[in-house]
Structures are given as structure tokens and as C-alpha cells.
Image (tube, rainbow, N blue to C red; front, side, top):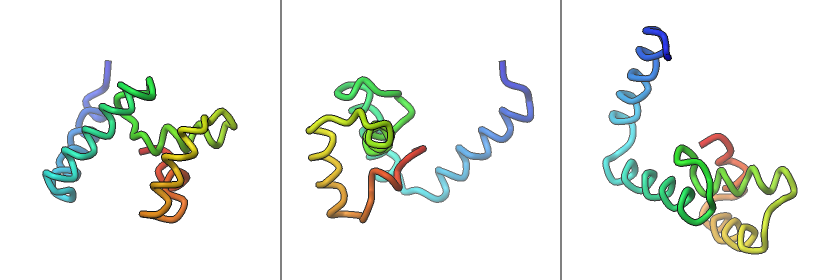
Length: 86
């Protein structure tokens, strides 16, 4: 069970996200997390690139992970590494 302070902090984060991110960005993030859980058997609260970044850091990445990461690196240098914790 979360304390009142933890809940207050969590709700404040939700409010910040709504103000800082567009609806489109939030929906795309939700799809990203959904597909991470569906295809990568990852956490529902983690993005695909963060999941792959963790696996690369552990040395357990697959060839498919490397391919996805190379594609994402064309959009942003070191995307999977930068996405750790998302």
C-alpha cells in the first residue's frame, strides 16, 4: 500500500506528463509499452527500446533486438541506451 505522500507524488507526475506530452505522444507511448508486453514479454510499464537497452547491457540481446536498435539509432544516436529506465 502506498502512503499519502507517495500517491501525491505519483499523481503530480501524472499531471506533469499530461501537461508536457501531447495526447498523440502519450498514445504512442502506450502502444510502445503494449507491444513490449505483447512481443518482448516485457513489463507493461517499459518501452521496447528500454527493454532492449537493458538486454544489451546484460549481454542477452537477440539478433532481432540488434536490428530494432539499429533502426532506432537512425532516429536518435544511442537510442536504446538513452531509453534505459523509460
